[in-house]
Length: 322
Image: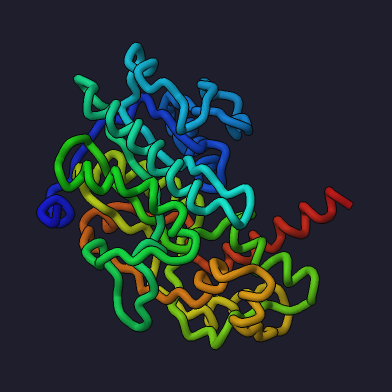
């Protein structure tokens, strides 16, 4: 596993046909648009929402019930796995973890039985490492899932096992904090900014955040699918980490709003322990894949410009809904 993670030679796999599981989601939708835009024939497994663009073919089903053998008549080169079974209430966490695990087990068993299995890129997250204060985090850091990762990491277990045993052609990608319209940025920063007229700073703000724009996340996943070593775990991020206080200061400058401190106890009271842990999470994310990262050029290098664009998008959306 460590030898695969540290391999210095980069692969050059073809990517003519991709299947995206979770292609209507926060990261999945930009990934589908990037694949289609680069000329890759793209298929989406559709459950509740349609693909973000008209071009992809659609297969109907859920990740825990789909008949994977039906793909054998037209195998993709790569399967991007971003699908998650989410909680419907705060009390069904154990059931969701079991369902996510079993869904991955079903898919991995099919891959292991397939004569020419496609490469599977499973998308997890850096919350799987747990909080590490001032320490750096790489793909070799022991796992200690916290916050949202407790539910979703259950789906990663079968892929870690397959990668360690060499049973299937698997790559595990772990994005850091992904910036984009919607998701955590809207729920915990932009929406409170609209409601209170201030940028929230959660806790002391000394925790480290590693950031990645969602468009770069999508393109890095394609880069990883083509060039990363099989059986590798790859952290995805862009630029050096920053403290939450620095990120909030940038949001304050971009929006012209003051900063308002919110205690972590208040976060727990309003949103629960899972969200509290997310904003107490501190990880200076790095990588053992220096060569792989060096061959990717980010689209969004200007964080301040990206934040201004996201804020402008929120203003436009509010105006259209008024």
